Image 1: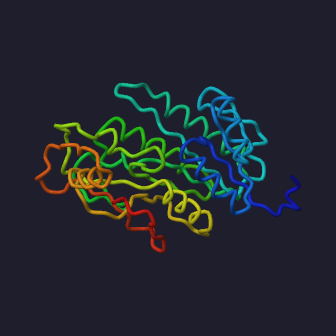
Image 2: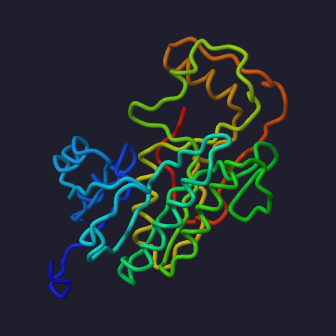
Image 3: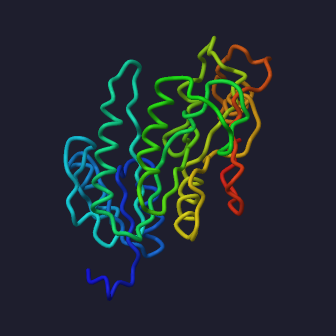
Length: 269
């Protein structure tokens, strides 16, 4: 592609999985060229069928071809962190190495969106917004924050998108919880976001000239998990899960205070 004759914008997605493919489909519909990475040849073939230019990549294992980065207008990094208790710093080290590569390889004017997690916030307290002050209360939360810091150090226009629990096609947590009893945390807020709203949010950000550096992606609902999943199970006509602490005050509500102008479409009940 000759950049002087470039008429289409180009999106690169590192980690083009369940969420990334939905994002890719939306951008392709809007006449963007999309490049995406997967770890296996089989999944790369699936990307090609969707109209995505496929690249083989596994964080910390394989290097990305230089032509992946060429002419990118937007880079979406959507790599679910594999953070287990007492795990070493493998994920963090790999993210730091990737960010060093991005500093060298990314076009100067490329925008970066990194999908992080609302898991950065403490396990209780709140409400928490992007403007809240808090201290990480777990090793996992600290690692998530460290990965965010590596992204924040990039010299590009970037947004860290802290996503709540993802729901959507083939991903409805109430089905795996159905019929279970004695589940802890019934008074915790049901902080969730639908895949379609994440796609819409990323599309919205791609058009912002000066996007906020950190955004919480969470549907604006104020409801306990015990109440939400009972209502959801009733809606789906399946046995409801039974939670503990259901009568205690609402805890750990996560919301957004900085992203004015965006509206969520996908009601969760």
